[in-house]
Amino acid sequence: MIFVENENYNINDDTHYNMDKSAISLKNLCKLFQGVQAVDCVNLEIETGELFGLLGPNGAGKSTIIKMLTTMLRPSSGTASILGHDIIQERDAVRSCIGVVFQDATLDKKLTGKENLDFHAQLYGLDRDVRRRRIDEILELVDLRDKADVMVENYSGGMQRRLAIARGLIHHPRVLFLDEPTLGLDAQTRRSIWEYIKELNVREDMTIVLTTHYMEEADHLCKRVAIIDHGKIIALNSPQELKNSVGPDTIIMQIKYCNELFLASLSSFSEIMAFDASEGQIVLQVDDAQSRIPQVIIEACMNRVTVISVRAVEPTLEDVFLKFTGRSIREGENTGDLTTKKCLQRMGS
Picture 1 (cartoon, rainbow, N blue to C red):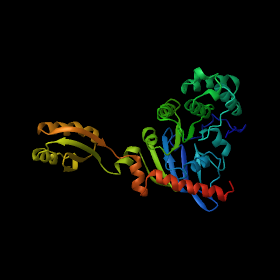
Picture 2 (cartoon, rainbow, N blue to C red):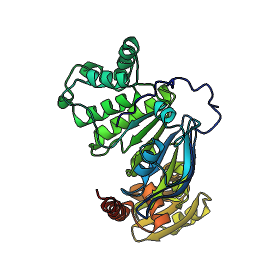
Picture 3 (tube, rainbow, N blue to C red):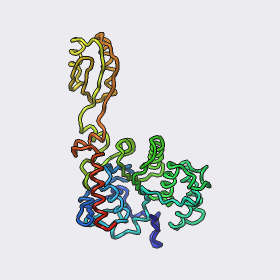
């Protein structure tokens, strides 16, 4: 979808906005589809300049939240604001200060990368000189300058995703929404996109909100993560704090010739919360597995215990989802998909 600027609203005029306020504010935001609660009274504040993640299974309500914040869907109740602009009362102002990259790319594959960006910039009312300068800047930022004159149909999947992000930035938005930005990409390309997103957040001084069902993506990118399930926020914090809420890290050691002296020494370490010893293996519960491994290995050597292998196991955001819902995020996707299909069927889609 293309958001066209209202001719009476200057996209660079945010002088009335207090930078100390939240960039995005949701108050009891709800959305019902024919009686099905897709988003259930969400309250949320997202800081200016924050890289924020909405994490949850497909159908959990993430994309519906984004569509309401970008004025594509009207809330059933509640409200929200973007940079102080109400999403219901000031739709044109909201659209002028945001960029959006949806799951399904809508690039014109019969145009070059530069032509796609130029067409989009014209729709936002940018004059020729500004367009030319901005297109060069954005192509450089997403590492596509050498592909500017190549037809998009000849772009790889990763290049098309980077161009879609570039298009969302063409009018210099203060807030960028990325809906499943790496969906369907291979692992290497996904990590490359992550680095572009992190650079955008810093270099463009931009508030970024992304939806994802990739645990590692949310963990790697986001300052804070809201875990969404059945339209509700069930947990909200930094990725590390969310993982800490699950429990301690684990060190698993495969050993030979364990002895009582070694076990006694492990008991003396305050950093080790608990341990279990069985034939050929010791499992330790610690507060920071990576930093404790050298200490444990040194202690084993001092007590003439042969260490065959050692590995650290840390809680993941998957474990957090499991803790709060009682099921894995993959199981949640199945439930969410059924709910979404039911909503669409009732709407006649």
